[in-house]
Image (cartoon, rainbow, N blue to C red; front, side, top):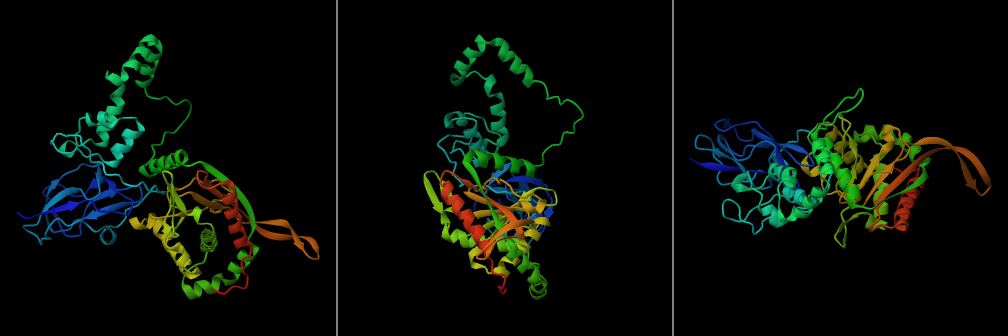
Length: 443
């Protein structure tokens, strides 16, 4: 028997764990090399994991819905009757993994913290805790000493997500030294405690004619990401109005020739990205992140662009090194990433590494918006719908009224490090870039 280990592949620089969604094969099934064995999900994309060898699947080490750290062995394949691939070779995600469909957005990059502790599990060795378990423990106020005493049902006695959630649910009913004070209080007010206990035992009843819709996994992740961002950053939003008449007229003039020559439709998005990149070079703190009391200024300008999916959810693919692309290159990147997002063909690396995000709320008819910062970034810009309005035009010969193409832009920024002066200065700089667009520019 020649066994090959199938490991959880790395799906991006910031992704340290993935959830097993579905096994396509079960122990005893034949598998061909590169044949999909299971589906996995991260907070970025859903992907298939292919077999790295031909043979028979002999062992499945994790169940569906288990959260597994990157690099962990998840299955074993006997290659005795197939063309073996020697050794325990990690699957290479960028070439071999094709996204199934995904989630948004949205995207939270949390540095991975190794979770090995001195606690002894059922195997007698160092007990491992996944980042997900540690995050739940931190949010629920569970200390490491308390965590070490939670019985685990995972591999080698590890504490799984199910174990810690069950512990949290039953935590209040188990008398411990830490809860004695609470018990004394509840004895003083038995009627209040009884009412709370009774309320927990009955399902919520919704009055009137309602439809109850269970959130899908993608919407749950979006909701968590948005709430976490509000809890992390001190949000402030500034607004500016800009006259984009020159930009609109220029695009109308060149769009047919541009599409004929480049094979791509030119939208407003690459023009907005170009203006943002120019201003980020002048004000680099807008392209940064916060690590404790340190400000990490990002030299690589990677612009995320919020893209609507057919389901109505949003995802944020990232234009890498946007400052190194000309307008043609930006247009091809914008169109390519948008099409990949809408057809579920984004690669895991397409949604990581963003340093600043642009969202176009005007696509949906809104004239302005107050977007929520895409963590761990510190700023996000929203552009509204372009509307024709009568405006006062100042000239050396006097004031006049003319019909102009006007647009509101807004900037939400993290007030922990971006003060109102800097945020407003950057926003107005972008506005001036758009207003002073050269109508005679060649592509």
